[in-house]
Length: 444
Image (cartoon, rainbow, N blue to C red; front, side, top):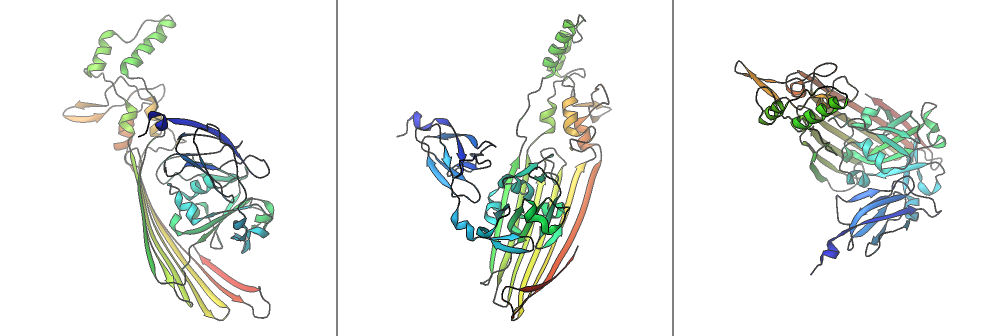
């Protein structure tokens, strides 16, 4: 039998530090077995989380040994994470080569495919920004197809993106399907990124998946989720707006504008008066789905990896939609002793649909802005000569019509296709062990 005491949640607070007694920001703190209860430590290494007495908290950080602590009667839990010594043998991509992590002196972080696929989001920039210390990620929009984060490293812009040894654009990086990625290395200081030139203050180096010497395996992953505004604001209804508007005028020594009869008509929705919650009329629930099928396998002579992915996002404002199809195929072949060939082909198709009025916060009279300006004491639609029209309301500037901006303003539609390939020949010289010659070419 369980008493109410064991069901009650407590606020657990504390801080996390490393072996040098330095605070660790960005440490993941989660309730074991719960997929939706978690937080991260702030810049001072502090955290706060709600948990039951029987829960177990899991503290994890890249490059550190994870720890588990049972809550019990404790309300303050402080943790010291130790460096994961086993990770020193991990192979890290650096510039145009690889090294063991234990021999590195530069500031480099690596995120594996397992870490990437743990995240519910499909934007690779958002995943990396949340998982790697020293990365600032700013997401300016939640609009489908435009919800990628702008990244900076230690406050510096001038970030470059390298995919399978080829320098690519930020849109190519954000257009990757997470299921295609083997690892992402982040080069964060001058010594690590110097090989890429003076215009690079940091680098994201992506290695996509390759085939393994094994029987052919086919795998499928799929996710479906919903999106809603993180916080629903409270708005005055029509009668409430009338009350406070009249109150403001009285305080200024003016007469009231809204009469008792007008307020009654607002509640009854007659004679053109209404009581409209424009927030509820415009915002709903978005749907996001992602599916991926991949196949890999091969022999000692030739290996392959192929992936097909589909992403669809429907915004929580109607008529906003984004679809993306990803295709990638990597082939590795041993042509002769010491001579190997690698061929990679990737492509993606992106389709965007939106009303003529956008949801971009920087655009004039964007739809969320119109929701804020629309007056609540009018009806959302009216009938004239047997036809239904969406209502616009006056403001100090231009009139606003949130519903008409979605359904009657026209549309913005774009279809974009991208195809890229990279080819390389590598020769391991027999006369000097460790020396290899490599020729690499690409198409865009």
